[in-house]
Length: 175
Image (cartoon, rainbow, N blue to C red; front, top):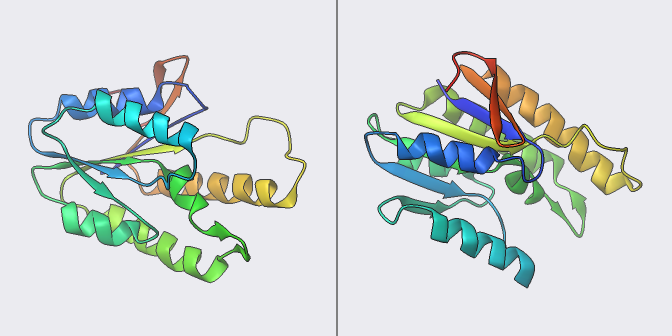
């Protein structure tokens, strides 16, 4: 069963997921979901890349995350998907939120999680604990990510909340 790892910004959730992946005995594939849009974010991505073991394979996931999961899933492998929030951002654009495209890809993602033969670590942001955003687009993002996290958690055998670098098991065994 997949394992959802969530937490706030700079909580240590990605580091925790990477630590779990380092302990895996088989091949690891890092599925990157972020779209680099500026120099500051490019530096963050470069830092993440430098911290990962060189023997891990990496796949860039666009909107079609389910297809990437299917392409890289292996019974002895581990997929580390980082992160759902960045993936969700791909459905926001100049024309607003792509409801139909998102719903189809979200449903495909949940089916891919259910059908995965190897281990899956799914990282996501917990964004619902702050103040209510002042603009409609940000509120929509927070709402959609909150709903997505709930759906993902219902498809995962384990859910871990990371705060201050400390993992707290919410569902399933502690890792």
